[in-house]
Amino acid sequence: MSVLVAEASRIGVAELLIILVVLALVVGGVTALIIVIVRATRPSRPMHPMAPPPNGFASGQAPPQPPFAAPPASQPRQSQDDLATRVRRLKQEGRTDQAIHLVIGETGMGHGEATQFVNTL
Image (cartoon, rainbow, N blue to C red; front, side, top):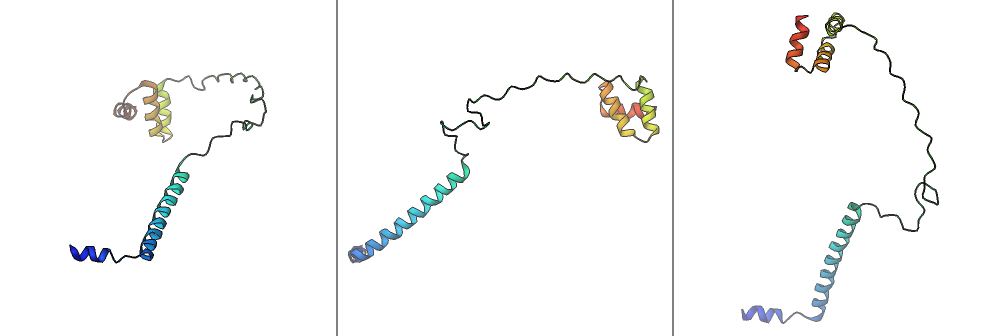
């Protein structure tokens, strides 16, 4: 123990200054790295309260919008056929998967039931 105390007392002013400079560089580097990470991950800065609104109008109000156009008139159903007729037509065209989806959509059947229904037609 006495050897360590004797060795420690041999550190001079120059050595202490070097240790402090190295320590300050390490702390400064870590601080700079933290600042860079925080700036890169935080959202962009909010607008200055005195800046004009982003829409370009000094009053902050958007221009009046034209009224909504009337929705297009509903188209009459192209086919008045029953479900079985439409499914048969899809099967004849080789569109069995679409026929199954049509049955599911029209009846609420499960996939297995709809497949069985389509296959029996």
